[in-house]
Image 1 (tube, rainbow, N blue to C red):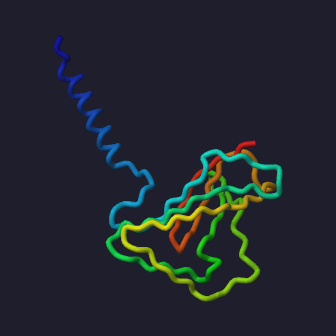
Image 2 (image 1 turned 90 degrees about the horizontal axis):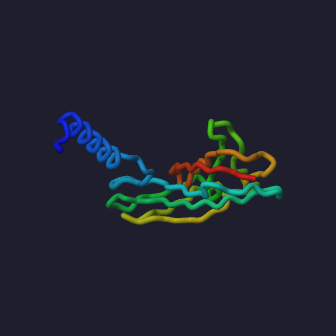
Length: 153
């Protein structure tokens, strides 16, 4: 049994659009020739009854260029900064500035085709949060990234 040309054409168009969509997707990875920050958090995290709920965060600063890139921060305490919003962008919490911070510019470098990976804990103020969806926005060595997470009771 032969399929009508219209069905074959429709199936071919669907296949081509699917393949193109798969190839052009933005999966959050750093492309070749770029440097950027990838942020990873648990998709679901349990809110504690304590004053703070520690949220584990994986930071990956990826250098996909062919040259060593300089890294700078205004001060050592400004290498890592964060703030948390609701899924609609409403402010919930930001990182507290330390009482004492050396105000000298901090410098480092990341080699070509290299990754700097750090694991941090973001102390969420449990009184400010309830079960729901949030976004963590991070600045690490002046590169920005974000990750969505859900708090559950």
